[in-house]
Image 1 (cartoon, rainbow, N blue to C red):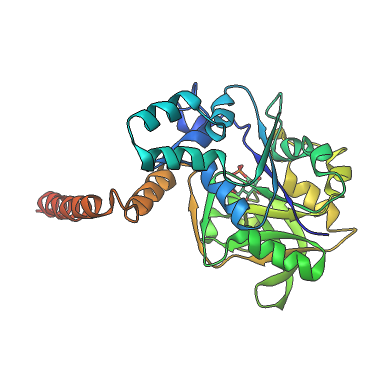
Image 2 (cartoon, rainbow, N blue to C red):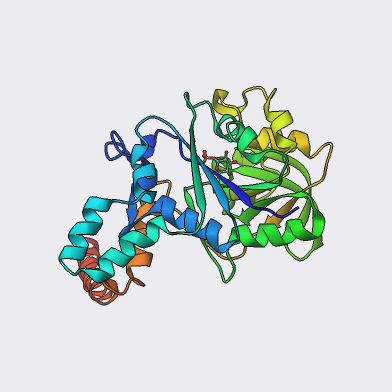
Length: 300
Ligand code: G1P
């Protein structure tokens, strides 16, 4: 069956970005001039996804507004002959995917958020795309997962090697053999293990291709780490009755879910954005000179 649907959980409170996220969704924080969630929707579109459900919560209405038309703004841009900006504004509404929204009333974990998508997904395979991870590769990671699924018809979870001391921030897999380049059988999936107990350095990153049986498991899933319903735990249970593979991502991942990663990503994108790249590059070179001078003075 063709993979046509994606679920983007966007109900989190965004506490890592307070006070910015007190009244504004973290998914609307821009990388240069584009909200992070738009990168995710664009990746879905590029991967052939047709329908997207965004699971939102309180204070998230601006996500819906962002993907909706804004007639007043468009009229103003038209009257002022700002054609480029008009086109840019309209292109967000005409992305060519159908967007649906539902709310998660209480933040009860990623597994609970995904369970809200049960009737939207129905009896089809689907992808889950987390908004904190922006991925760069020749081929979008979501498309890579779909290509794997088209051959195996099995759930496939994206993983990536991370530095060992960071494994406790992620779901981690215990691989039981690489069956072909970058595709692993998995013994178990563990949510945020202690560093000395982690079965490997292969961490789950924010893209999952799941078969709909995951909903039967989520329906009775008990809270796990942090007292929350964990998607990783449900995947581990599913792996006992049907094969779940792990696909190793070898491209570039930007974690925009923490302050440092967010700033680094903004700089990287700023260095490729046509309006900012030259001035920003020069600024960084000058700043580097200034900082290394300060460093030398400190040492002397
Ligand atoms: C979630 C998942 C975790 C995964 C991570 C990837 O954790 O629970 O398994 O490794 O996303 O970004 P969170 O970062 O939401 O705490």
